[in-house]
Image 1 (cartoon, rainbow, N blue to C red):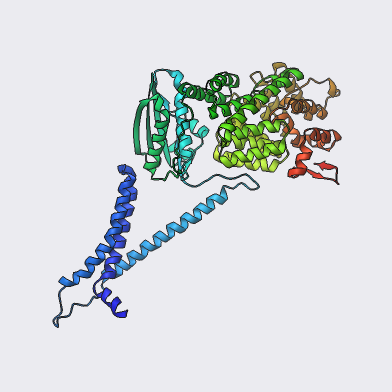
Image 2: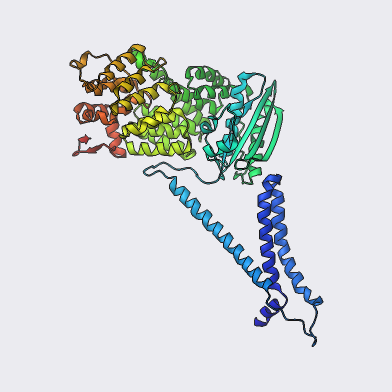
Length: 611
């Protein structure tokens, strides 16, 4: 064996192997860096790796047979190999290569672990989605059609491509609302990528003319503005799902990430053969996002009647039905019985639509979390919690599901867990106005009213959920003793969710705080979130009027019920009326089954106490 190694040394085999390893490694680094800019396909990179692997034994064979032509010494023996400076350089280079590769592997492993740990919200019991991978933002596609009314269609194409890319395990796609805040702006790619924490950006346009559609898209490396991939797809509208699939796969190919699909699986599924149904579904989805709920229902009901097997349309219709009471003035202004019938009708329709969507698609996360909201309105708390967790099991990063689940946790008194979930939601999606409004509400219930003020002040008063923005901001000002600002904010409320007379009465009362009224029962009735003013003028018991109404209405995730946990309402939680209220709501049975809330604990076998 000693002679064998001596012979390898004499024939310079070690020198050749080291030199080949160093040169091959350098070549691979060059290829990896220039391939994106040159738009080299994955096959070209793979070919280079294969050639380098095959070339290694070939180089060793040539080094061995080189002895046949090597010069001999005077006595006829081949010259012995001598150690030269070249050998030391090669050994040093090889050591550097090995050290670099080892460091990259260790750093990647530890970085992945650290990132995963940092993104696990303490106390959160729901599954977490992947936080590693290539970060990519799909910016709103420009509508370049002659018809400006096709905006919903270009937005829909954007959504579908984003959804398809999100199915690829090695990609981290920036949520839609964050990307859409840059819609219609003169956009600096580097600034946008920094704001969205995205390494790559996809930009594009959609032109629709008659039965044809042309989608142009480009993939840009954000740090240097290099265009990695660009293409256009000009097809018939009947091929729309194929276009979405082709674009998503082309982007994955340009980034050299595996699709990770099972046999026969696709990134985009042709969910309906009725093109008109699909277009109306896209239109309705834009209306739901704008919280124009009644119009969305008017669009969706004919869609599911014409195309009853279209599962996404049923799921979206379920969401519209259960949102209808929240964004209608009827829940706050109509007589109780009229409001109850309206809410009951919405919930029944919403439940039927959600169950139909699940029947058609057993993994439809949207249907599951909307059904969960409806079950919570019906006081089926354990069923609702299980449905929320099922939705998050299908899609751990579904921001709508996280949004509603945290509201559910607040309602049942799991205040810290609700706040922890909001922190996770803000990490995923920091720019949605209604998300930030509810985050501020949950902060207030957790005793962080002052910290919620900057969040609410940063939002325009007319954003989606603008009424609640002003109501929660006024409440935060009042908690900080800033009563005049609270009154001014109430007067800034617009829309029809509360009457103008009610806003004026509430503003007048909070402006005179902390002076106590002498006749609490003679105060105006605030059957809305403005009932917080009672707490500051010595009429705390009047808070129950709106809270009881919300419970009677079975209002989905109604804020009138969940705000019983506010710090300023603490005296109410010491009363027998509070115990009767949570007992009627079914919360006591839920607590005994799933654990007691943050502010309550059992007292003996049949009683409990709350702080």
